Length: 204
Image (cartoon, rainbow, N blue to C red):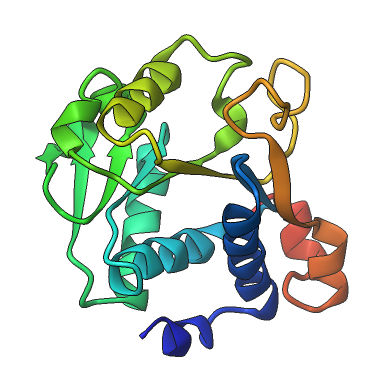
């Protein structure tokens, strides 16, 4: 089950997953995971999606505004847990799956269609810094729709930066995401040998 897959993650990816579960158990607020560029946050998302379906019998949806990242997140999940039924909803890819227990979705394609995805226990937002403060826009609409179906749904953010593009911290009491549950920066990944100084500079 989850234990075997968890062992395949890098130590800090495992720590991020476990710290986030602890947060969800102990607090009512929504956590955000901060992993620097190149740190493999797709693996963390994949592990959480896998655990939600396999270990808890739950249903999960991951949102993102970048279609390449959607594909990456889905690929990692399929590698990590090939037995989890997955789907994608993205006009950019011409895929419109709403039924699978684990779905990755392009926010532009789904924002007004939350009800179509039925009951979801966890919603992951990849690139969470894209959500504007008190977002009335696409994310806000979708979040509201998910909460109508399941008022107890929990949200997990993922980002490489804790700041929004238009200034201000992502995590605030009044925002969708309230606290950083785990954070690892570039310097630590370089020091520990996960990224070379060169690859860090190239922005990969």
